[in-house]
Image 1: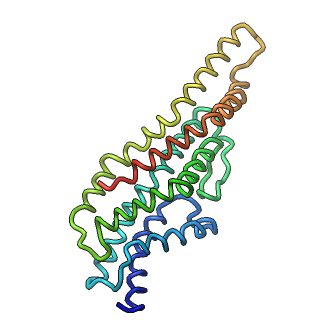
Image 2 (image 1 turned 90 degrees about the vertical axis):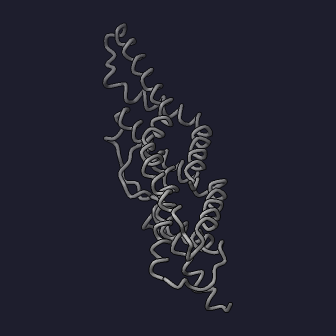
Image 3 (image 1 turned 60 degrees about the vertical axis):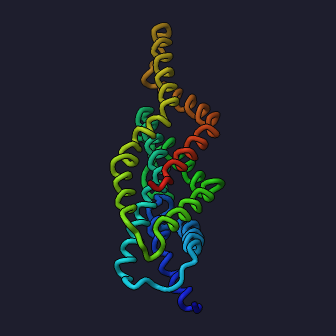
Length: 241
């Protein structure tokens, strides 16, 4: 084993984490995305300590890219769930009219979608999130070594993603937003009842501002619970089965 073989093996092992991390919708084309992704790609590529290139380089490279794609979809679940939860709150609260461009996710989003996706990024790139990512890639390298043999585990992983995990994203986002949605309903009911006695109170013009204040205080008070919930979702999404 010489230095050239080690370098070529390291370069080959970069395919899988590079494809996986390119699927994460955070700072894809910006300087922040490069700063966050490059060290992770290099670190994950070092885990198998592989040397040399496989005999069927093209076929093995395609399989590595497919595995990386499946891993990237699994890793992105926490962002999709957080975005769905925040988007539901913004839509029901009428805050989508104030949507602004988010350069980190390269899309227009309103108040709560931006807040929840930032929570997802915090879960992904800090604390136990990095530890879970390392374990996720270590398990993947153990199940499917670089260059093969790959078996039929990749097909089963895609089947699990298509039939079980990805279709449940909206439901998980709705569950995450459900407490705040209930609070919005209570605020609307309270304004409606108050308008029956205060004739000059227009609930349609004041509801948006009042709900924004109530939801902001509620969201600030339940930040630890939201982060814990996102961490649990992230951990469950990184199961290779």
